[in-house]
Length: 320
Picture 1 (cartoon, rainbow, N blue to C red):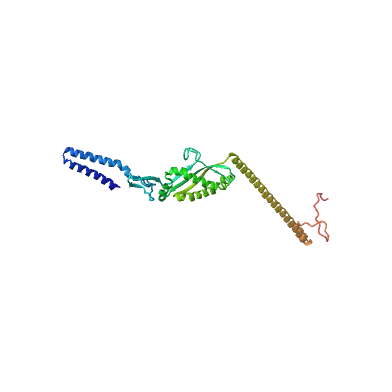
Picture 2 (cartoon, rainbow, N blue to C red):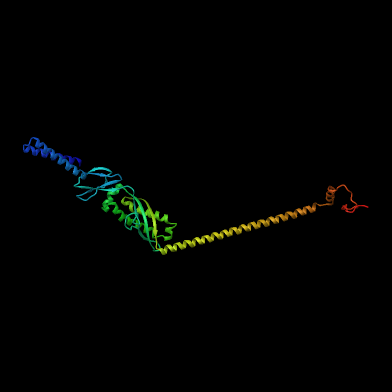
């Protein structure tokens, strides 16, 4: 393309010189001045045409070559950098391929100024409004086919086709679940299943889904109140069950302690009875005499017989 522009400039200059020769204008100050003026005019015209001839593709983008005559699209995209084209025959549409995030929310401070919330129904038939977001990239090699399919820019595709794909995927998943489950234990599962459905639905168009997020869920107030009441009742039942188990454990502990004490008392009584029995068996007359002998102070008893000596306690009265 650049050579055609240069050849056009050369052809214009050659034509100008030929016309001068035919008129016999072979020189002179006036002739040189006209040559300079015309040359400058040709250069200025080329500079004016240059932006239409050379196109620059930004990094993170690709260029789509559109043929004006037949309306077709080249299936090979243009990469970042400078590209020469014929402005009369072709146009170049620039498309972003970097990571983008589509935010669909009710709030005007996020996403677009419009209400872009997604409305679906739960398995109970209750209406739900969802705030969601989806991060994605465009497959550079599939961008020409994407443009050929929709013939519009990526922002319009986001708020049209992609938004509808998100609504359909959410309805397929949320429509099988209860609201309480979506708000609670199955939220992560709902998000993962919806993302899988979006990948399957959008990948053929070169839209690579990187992350899907469920930011907020809104249900009718009566439904939310019923869910809250159910949660409170479940919490109370769980508390009562825990208290009952605590009392049962405490009663079992007390019973074990009482049984232990009774067993200990029984064992002590049996040991004492056994000790007494052994003691009774061990007491004999010889043992008694031996023990008395150990305690004798050397004084003879005042009364004696063949029987066991009797120890007479000293009297307080003095002898006469």
